Structure formats: C-alpha cells, structure tokens
Image 1: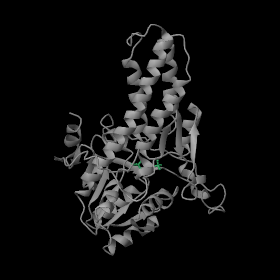
Image 2 (image 1 turned 30 degrees about the vertical axis):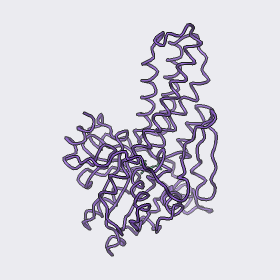
Image 3 (image 1 turned 45 degrees about the vertical axis):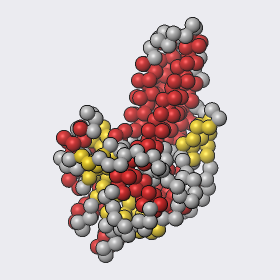
Image 4 (image 1 turned 180 degrees about the horizontal axis):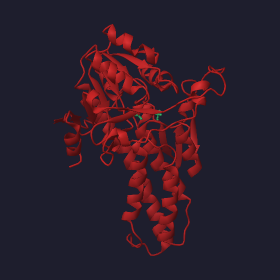
Amino acid sequence: MIRTGAIGTGRGWKGRTPMITPVRFEKEKLLILDQTLLPGEEKYIEIRTKEDIWRAIKTLQVRGAPAIGVAAAFGLYIAARDLETDGYEDFAREFHQIKEYIGTARPTAVNLFWALDRMERKLLSMGDGLCFAPSWRQEQEYIKEELLKEARAIREEDEAACLAMGELGLSLLKKGMGILTHCNAGTLATAKYGTCLAPIYLGQERGYDFRVFADETRPLLQGARLTSWELSREGVDVTLICDNMAATVMKRGSVDAVLVGCDRMAANGDGANKIGTLGVAVLAKEYGIPFYMFAPTSTIDLNTPSGDEIVIEERDGQEIRQLWYEKPMAPSGIKTYNPAFDVTGNQYITAVVTEKGIVYPPYKENLKKLFE
Ligand code: MRU
C-alpha cells in the first residue's frame, strides 16, 4: 500500500534561524560546510578540482546520502568547467573519466552514483551538434551551462523532496511523542531540511513538542556532533545518548517512534544505513515501537534486489581507536573491524517514507509502483 499526502506544500521551515545548508554554489564557487569540524567550527571550504570533491566525500567533510549526491553533481560540473577539448567526443570521454573517479570516493550511498549518472545522461542528451551552436567552442560553453542547470535541479529537487517527506512523516506522528534517531539524516545530510529530521522541524514549527533522543553513533559520532547540534540550534528538545543506551530509553517507554535515514534501499525494502541502525530496528520490534525509514526515490535502487547485494563500506580502524579522542582509546595497532553501514531487513521496517508517498509492505511490489 502507498499513501500519498500533502506533497510539496512548499511552505518550508520558518524557524528562528536560517536552516544551514551543507552545499552552496555562489558566485561561481562550490562551497561545502566542513562537517568534520562541527560542532566546534562552522567553516565552508571551496571545492576547485575533482580531487577536492573526491577528498571531501571520502573524508566526510560532506556526508549523508542526498548531500553526497548534490555535492558530487556540482563537483562534477566544477571539474568539467575546466575542460577545453577539441570536440564533443573528447569532452564526453574526459567527463566520463572524471565521473568514474568521483564515484570511487564511497561505495554505499546510491545517491552518489545516481547524481553522477544523471549528470552524464544530461551531457549525452546534448550529443554532438545537437545544440546547433556555430562552433564547438560555443557548443562547449552551452553544454557547461546546461550541466550547471542540472546540478542546480538536483539540489532543488532534493530540497522539495525533503519538505514532502517532512509533511508525510509528520502525518505519522502525534504531539508530545518521544522520537529516537540514529546518525544524522538532517539538513546537514541533504540539500536542506533533512529526510527523517524534516518532520521534526515541521513539528517544532507547529507546536508538536517532540522529545528527541539522538544516538551518538559510534565511531564517527554523527549523532553527537551533527544531529544534536542541528536540532538544538533550531530549539528542538534533544537528548544525546550513547548507542548502547537505546534499549534502556525504549524499555522505560520514552520512545514512541524511531525515525532514520537510508543510504541505499534495495528493491525488496532492505535498507542500508549507518552502522548501528539494524540494532535499533531489532530493539524497536522487541518493544513494539514503529520504525520508519526515510528514503527519497534517489536513494531507492531497484537494480539491487536485496540488502545482500549492497556494498558496505569498510573504513580505517583508526576511526575506532583514536579519531575524535585526544588520546588513543585502544592499544595501537589492535585489530579492528569498521563497517560504516549495516542493512536493516525489510521485516523490521514499519513503513518507508519517500517524497512520493508512504510505502507499506509488501515492499517489493509497492516500491516499484513509485517509479511507474
Ligand atoms: O557516513 P555518513 O555520515 O555519510 O552516513 C550517513 C547516514 O547513514 C545517513 O543516515 C544517511 O545517509 C541518510 S541521510 C539523509
């Protein structure tokens, strides 16, 4: 079953502070909020080359599936803007190489590949001579302008999708609810507003008085550094907990719903998200708490049949041993296993919130309908 609602009311967030945006394109410059410095420092860095955007994605200066997609689209445009080739064929070949290179930054969030492919499709739709410019030089300029328009469209569509998911997500919630979230699927992880944090912002504006529990999200602490920062900045009642405290807050009856984001949802509704999400989902089922996964259609990958086929990124063990701590918190060189994501089986997901509607099981049939 798919339920649609007040999609795209376009009202947005009228909070007391301007909602922060992680990716900005201003005066021909691509600026990225360096999220590795948060919450201590709010600093935008300029992306000038393909290596800059690759590094920004790899090191999580920009992170969160939709924000990675938006940043990659602009990054690909920035790198393509510097191309000066002798003809369309050369341009398309070099563009493809840059696209493939950026795509090696991280493997799990499908939005990266979705956005890069969409940019390339745009280029290919303007095949040689199709724009009728008198010379290749002029055609090349035209192509670059169109690529920038496409990157802007990706960002605008993501913003609209987040607002729509906010309205739909809010329809699942009641005033005064306790909500638990894992990692960061807020404005920092998207073009603006967030996926699973969007209903919390809309609820805040409309007097829902939610009490939010943010899992700190080991090892990179997206919950502690980012979710608790962005929610408290907007006046939301947020309590930070360690990941191993989720069971306790659920058992005490403080959690009425779990809202999480998604990095890639397979065709059968299995959803990869930040490591630890699976544990939260299993707990939610045990305690009878609805578990909602928010996934814009750009995060749904019908070409991946199930969660078993999703490539899970493994990151450097140093993130577990020391990163974010002043001193090592484990013996140096100790063996580590550091998967960045896990897959929550569809049996744990009460509903999937997309910008096109709320999807209920059976997911294999119902997710497909979103794309018809
Ligand atoms: O490693 P990260 O910080 O990029 O992981 C982010 C997440 O797991 C988010 O929950 C997910 O990308 C959804 S963001 C709307």
